[in-house]
Length: 507
Image (tube, rainbow, N blue to C red):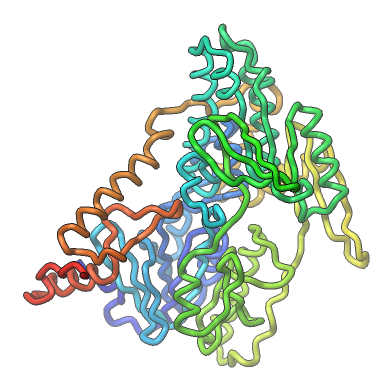
């Protein structure tokens, strides 16, 4: 079924925003008083505060506190509507965005387009790693990881085999960036404090946490000084840091690591987490094919100084999808980029010309990462000085709390977060330790069903053997046919007998 989202009789400037993350949400809100109609298209129903996912994964806060419903946030913005769907194609020539929700296809025309589709986890060409080591990009990832962490302790409690217990109580975090550091610290803290004394056959404090990275340092973007301090703090908590170590293979029971000298070794571990890299949305490739814009190694779009793409001054790319020198893939970059794009659209409506736009300027507000309760590292630029102000410890941790509290959307979510933080940081407890079997098993089960569905479609002639639609883990999406099938279904809906015939398989 194909539907058009074009508003009947509307003559106002149409702005389509792709993505409900920081870039998408803040650009939409920036257009609140503009004489435009805004359509925000997202594949989830919520706005996700991604930097705090690790706290969901380790039981400190609930997912609802960092993922409020996008419709509720924009409820009072009369010129904005929200459409749920996965954007499958962008037609720059005809100015149409095509999105899909299950079997329902929606075509949304635009006059201006803001693409803030974000990034997925990158396994550097080894997408099969995702089956055994989930990333940290979505609510599903965080809940699955919580289930895997706590489930490992539960399995160890039932085991009488010493080697199996050791494997179950070894947690490996791949990637020593901010997410990896924060996650490793919280797993260590949870095993040493929260879970201490809750089991009868095992001692949770004997859990082994390994932070592993192919790079030679912890927190490379924050410099050697803060990286060394973060590493020292983690080691004091019992975290084992292994650098210059590249993961070359993964399976259910462990991982194979290649050292700097070329030798390999194996680490036995059932619970593994991947936080080592990101890959921009595949929509960037579509833009490159249609406009000639360049992509970087991670698939990010090398935008012009005004964040637009060549030949399309009203198509902006912001957030994790844009590649701009000295702009990190952080929330602030997405927020500022989204607001800049919205302001450019508003200025053009008042008569400004695209060629007269001031280049986008990023205001670096610093970077920070928590390590444990009462401990964090922070780097903040100081006006007039070449070097940043670097600090660590309690005040850096307090600064992290206050800054992240500001960017949580909604008073109620902020209040609930404060309550959960108080409980977690002033006691040994955590309020979100519930896990279910579905949280751990559902993702891989759905991928298996998707593969069955894809094979069925190919056998019936609905798809060519080379056709494949993929999830972030590299596996096909259930009920997500390729554009060839979507075209056939669209024609069949409109009454075309020819298009309704199954497509013959390629020889």
